[in-house]
Image 1 (cartoon, one colour):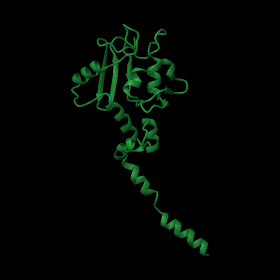
Image 2 (cartoon, one colour; image 1 turned 90 degrees about the vertical axis):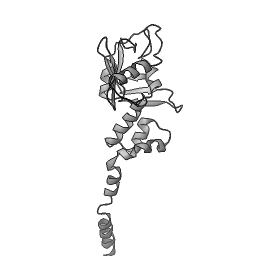
Image 3 (cartoon, helix red, strand yellow; image 1 turned 30 degrees about the horizontal axis):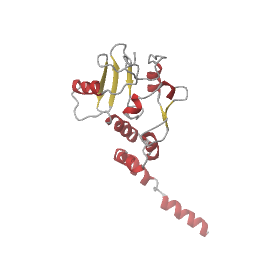
Length: 190
């Protein structure tokens, strides 16, 4: 089953940036730091929103009251493909007793953090981890803004310090510009 019951589901942080929800009953592992989705977006996710063929998750109503298409990587495609789906329940994560969407994972998340001896870490920190990993791996600010679904670039700017080559690459574009400009001017003068 793919629910988050207290007894057979547990959230396991494998490091501050990697978090997995483990189904203890059948071994399904779901990584949620590969999408940057907010907790309520994850918990309210319905199967009809997932397009594995084209590689995206459709979010019809985000925090910013807009719709979004979340690209998904092969890890998430594989995980979602291997979840046992109940055709009578539209939700990916649901309460097995009521069949309704899973409302909270606070208990299992808190317990997993305790077992891993991780303090001062919230579920939302996984979203920041997503943004941080993208920034550290050279994703541009406009792309990061779009993937994080920030309404304003100022929110995305918090990740710029993680882009060590961002300013260096920008200044590197000036290498030789004076010489090239001088050569162009000289060739026009002749």
